[in-house]
Figure (tube, rainbow, N blue to C red):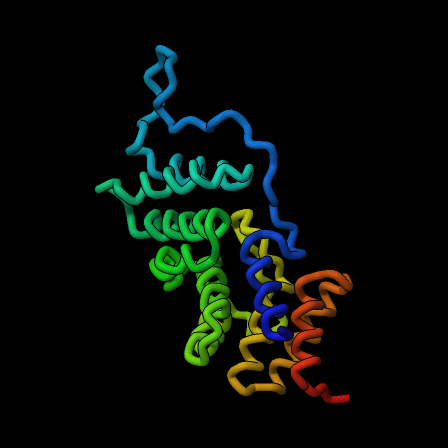
Amino acid sequence: MIVLVAILSIIMIASGCGSGGGSGRYTIPPEIPTPGTGTGGGTGGTGETDIDALILSGWEDFKYGAYSSAINKFNQALTSTSISNNQKTEAYNGLGWSLTRSTGIESGFSAFSQAATTNNESRVGLAAALIQRGQKDGFAQAVKLLEEVGLRENSTTFSAKNPIGVSNAEAHAMLAWCYFWTGDSSRAATKINFARSIEQSNDSSVTQIYNSLVALGLKFNN
């Protein structure tokens, strides 16, 4: 039960329900059109070939909770034959987070895997998916991913470019949880203390992870 509470907290973080200022689900505005598909008489816009505009529009839909529309736009970008490697990474990242918000972290696993080589937001998303699986090898892989973000050092601030709703404190707390399950209790204690120092709310996901670690027997140096 203790483990389940912490894992549920991490699932909530990735789902935008943690304490990281996630956008939540706003009232969905009228559908954001794909560039170049309006009914006006102008000639501006390039439709589905405007990959950057599709990715931007996908994130706008994501921000307002229109996840199905966001998924369609990121997928549309990925089907373009002219997509660059950087654009492909951005589209897979957006797809991973949109799938996560729509149907759960596991559904974003494949997309995150495509982008996690270079994208920090996808590294965090993939780490959350691995944590949810609860497997020893997965925790070790999650540690690697989160350390690649730079979170081994407390001086590193995780700041997402897109509105994925994961705070710096939550990202550090996720790493603390992974350290504990890979047997590095010293780093786990140091890391969760740091996460709490920047997110002190008693009902936050960070505090829930802290309480779970304490209940599981994590010791702190005085």
